[in-house]
Length: 159
Image (cartoon, rainbow, N blue to C red):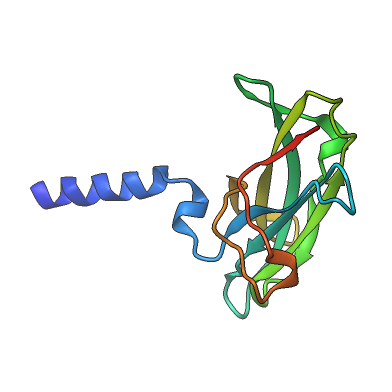
């Protein structure tokens, strides 16, 4: 009886974890933050592993949004910071890619703090078979990958 309770508790605990904490290869990061050559540009790079079986591959879809921090909470930017859902992969392997958003830099003496939030779906046809939501995080830099020279959780643009 006690073992069943402990097992049930462990299963509930794992179910309560965010999907990116359970799923190897699923992540999102800021890989570009206001570079001199592209002022106000913020890049979000994502990695979405395949799901399903070889016979029943699940296609990878994602929606990338940018949020700004108002000093107390994260706020949505609306359609200017939202890609909508895009079909990205056919489920044959891990998809990596991303998008760049460009914003007007803040006026002198001001700052803008941004992060990405990614909604991922694995689909078979029009049926959603799995989903995850994750904010951008640091820790994915790879000096050998031109698209991952930096990896940040947030992007601070100040003038």
